Image (cartoon, rainbow, N blue to C red; front, side):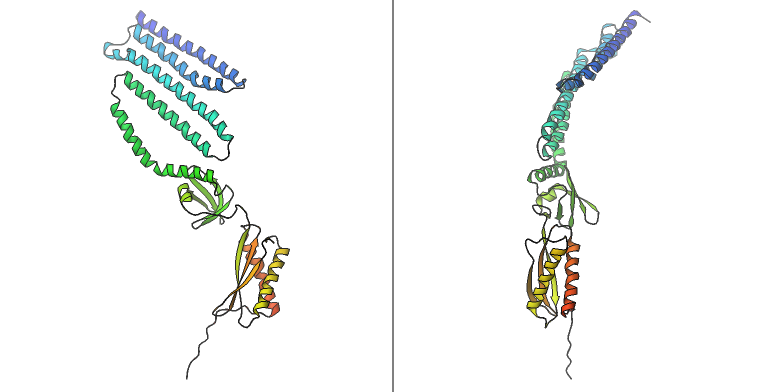
Length: 343
């Protein structure tokens, strides 16, 4: 084994030792940074720690190959200054990308946490991702320039790819900004009961792309946010959970209309006093609506305390109506058809 190769190996070993010392120093600095109040030292150490260690090893390998004549002539390009500069650009890109990402992650989310809603949190997440891609794209382009590679086709391709990605991401962006609009405008919140199209249930999650609701029969429905912002949504929880129920009631022809209305109103007032489902303000109202084909048609408007007891409300009224009508001798009619035949 010739002397040049021995020296080259020695240089690489020295580089590994220095990298090991650097690793020890970085670990010590990380522990020290944990004791300080500021997070800037944590960010800087995390950004430069690993890249510097790898840079030391790469530089020692480069020096060993370049200055001790161990590389065959056909591979001389491996030890050119362009390669060294590319290594520095790569390490610099790594450091800048990590540094900016950590700054946005730590301070961006801290700022977003101080505001209401999660729109800014979503924007911070998007910015974190974008910074990494943009910095690395710039770094790779600089390496190509350093290696005398024409980057015009890459830039043109990036432009075309950007358009393609924008078109492909159109639905994603529409839903993303739809989620931002829902967060800012607040037509409903997590926990609210809403109705959208044929779906009726409680809001579980307002996400970046979609909103999930749990229907009253326990099914989970995922709705794209852009659908919610471009169509009508009924919110039963806000601003007041009270809701008015319309209960149709019929009585047989020949019944005293005034007395029927009195009985229905008495039944409603009894239900308000003796159950937990009803609100006493606004009060109940009874109207005689029309002469039906087989019955006199009435309607009771009564308010419940909450939107989530529709069956209890109808049951409480209908049971009392049935009992009172029976006690008062008022018949509840059923559809009848009278047929007369001429002889």
